[in-house]
Amino acid sequence: MNPRSPSALLLKRRFLPFFITQLLGAFNDNLFKQSLVLIILYRLGGQSQSLLVNLCALLFILPFFLFSALGGQFGEKFAKDALMRALKLAEIVIMLVGAVGICWGNLPLMLAALFCMGSHSALFGPVKYSILPQHLHGDELVGGNALVETGTFLAILAGTIGAGLLMSQERYAAAVSVAVVLVALFGYLASRGIPRAHAALPELQLDWNILRQSGETLRLGLSGQHVSVSRSLLGNSWFWFLGATYLTQIPAYAKDWLHGDESVVTLILTVFSVGIALGSMLCARLSKGRLELGLVPLGAIGLTLCGLLLYWHSDGFSAGNPPQDWLALLLQGKAWWVLVDILGLGAFGGFYIVPLYALIQARTEEGQRSRVVAANNILNALLMVVSAIVAIILLSVVGLSIPQLFLVVSLLNLAVNGYLFHAVPEFTMRFLSWLFGRFLSRRASRAGGDS
Image (cartoon, rainbow, N blue to C red; front, side, top):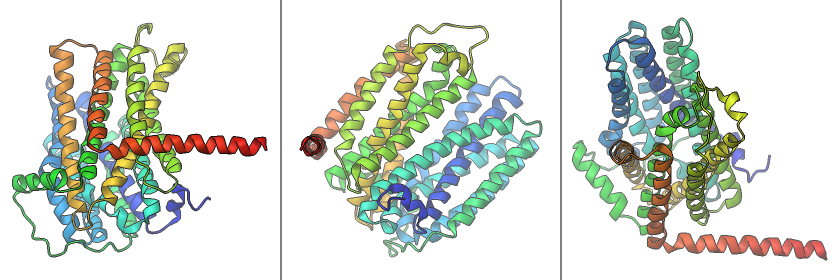
């Protein structure tokens, strides 16, 4: 294995235990959340299923508003390895509560566990990203972030699919309960191998006023940092606006426009997640160990282009009764263009998000890093809520179709990133420099071959 390859980090103790810990955490979040949604939709009676499903989304995202700032403070004051182990122990307790709720069919207990899992993730997030610069060398930071993003999205996909498989079992309650507790246990065992990561600011006085500290954390991230960091926070959160918009609409898009069943939804989610993984790893490869900001404009251009193409390719699919499965869909040649567009959205998303994360980590002071990541998490949650509101307005009030919604957010992506690159010209200059360097390198290799 090439020692410069990002995958070489998977052989190092200073990275592998952390990677497995965060991977299992993302998997368990989605395994439990998706299982709860399926329980509400298919196992519980009543007329309020839609309300309960949306309540699940709210209960999981609300803690990111409430507790991210506290997680940022914890990440500065305490040793990060010890904090991770404490949080993974808490996850075992939370999953035991959730397992009892599932086995007893107690919905309030399951919802309480979901809220606690959201709280766990809100506290874990700032530590997750701020620990990387302490354990990785400067030329490993992009590769480490690429692996984390790859693992996270694949874990989300695996958790979503795994929930469907477990819920199809006759004894689904026991299957889901055992699975979430075991995954939490394995996550704690993995966390025990994380090397020491000292406290960056042990003298920090904790502020338990949630609203005040959230405001202070946002001010620290948006106005207390270099402009490249503060605007990268905005760009990072804008990506989650885009991602939430596409991922939320995929089930309805697959049903109403591709005329597919649940397997088509799974196919699209798989292609998108694989695209993120491929883009993240290719970003690390093209960066060659450097923080290559020139890939951010490339990712932004690709996100807009693929969104426009997805709008263009969304018409003309034949309807069937019953809805067609993924194999039948693939027999229509146009479906392949849709899948290429989805894959491109994921891949260019990887180009876009990985350098932004690495920049935030590299250019933030160690004593502020966890709180700046916490500010990023608060903004991410806010933009995901805004994406839902915008989608509701455009689809229900304005009356746009889902492909037209994709068209609008693709054009908005041009405007948002136009502002980002105007505010931080370094992105554009590095992009042009990167393109020029690639051109010269190719010309030189051709000249060498001719000689």
